[in-house]
Length: 171
Image (cartoon, rainbow, N blue to C red; front, side, top):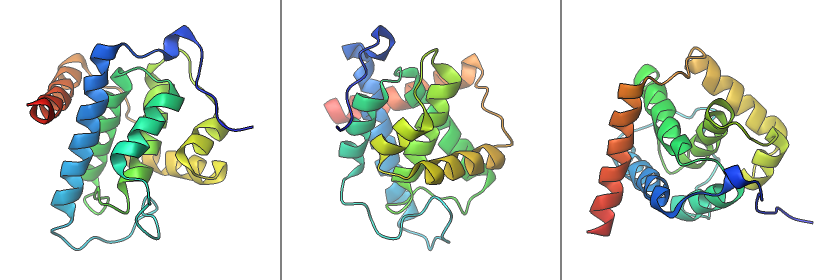
């Protein structure tokens, strides 16, 4: 029957918060450009080939169907940034950004939002098998040493980064 948009009030994203989703997409695109300059080893987050859907379209799909709060964008970027700082071989590239985004946004929704969906739902939306998303989630948690807490100052810093990316695109 297909995927339906969440109807819970918590799933509604205020228009002003769309800037964080835009900023996240642009930040990930920027990171993929930086990674393109270096040889990258393959990780579990790498796809076999570049996904046909660009990161903008993919993020729009996740935003629409995950129904997560805009704050999850901030946490998603924090988790990805922590991951690549702790494990530089986990670069954000055209082959890895979709899976890193799906995994980090799933973790963010579960950690940050009061209402969230099952992994089978998130996997279907993300275009992954449930077992695959489960494994990616487990691996990301292990690589982050299960440290998902984001303090207020760090949150504000990353939120500003996303807003700056969005503002540059709007200008």
